[in-house]
Image 1 (cartoon, rainbow, N blue to C red):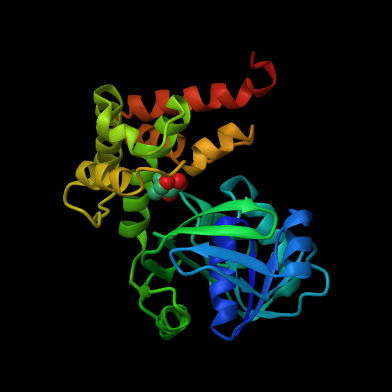
Image 2 (spheres, rainbow, N blue to C red; image 1 turned 135 degrees about the horizontal axis):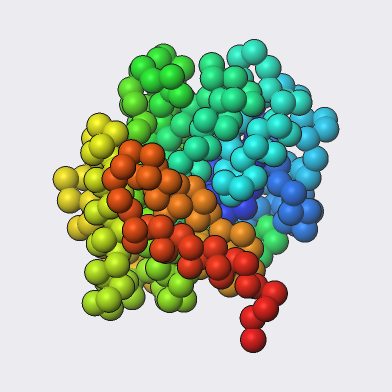
Length: 308
Ligand code: PAF
């Protein structure tokens, strides 16, 4: 399969690298030119749960010259989704599938509106990864990937896609409707990401600190009430217990939002707690904890330059 991974940071490198090892014709497309240069010159150094090795895979900083692809996987930060979909027009054809496994709400809709609903496939993944430096990525945790059509329904192409990922070493499952899995992951991110970024602690601390634990539970419960209001069937009967379980299992991890705050980057708060608070407002379901967590993270983003 001809596959381009748009956004080849931590998670993009894991997916692209493992698919290249599985015999696919992979291009890693990223605007971080130092990373691209290191991969082209020395290969992609992938370490961690899937093994420690060097993968020879093509990387590029520009969409020019990428031919029409069978599959595009979008793994940029949510603030860059529209730009990534626009850039993908060049190498997207009538039969191209465009898969997003990004965090949060709204990415799939943005991709569908730019590249066409018939191309868009959404989902979620439990893999964890972080960048060690240019050309080097640590695969911190392996897990299942769940995917499905933007329009819903279990089509042969999503079943084949899940099989392709699984065969390459990325266990995947196609489902009729991705809302449940996507919202279940959203609630995990809503409970962990903002709090770890505000407290500047690894995930595990949230399970031990009684005040943080209480805030995590409130944020997740608000999100679960909104999910229920939308008739979304969550993948876990107790989403708070599940979120605490993920925080414990990834105890040593620096969440993606804390990594962003430490680096002075824009975070994904807009598609996580803020998106939940806005969704709650539309539906008349109060989400004050998510709203305050979102405002605090936005205030941090807004004060990077004023830090003392
Ligand atoms: O965004 C993240 O960091 C991860 O999705 C998670 C599950 C919170 C673990 O760090």
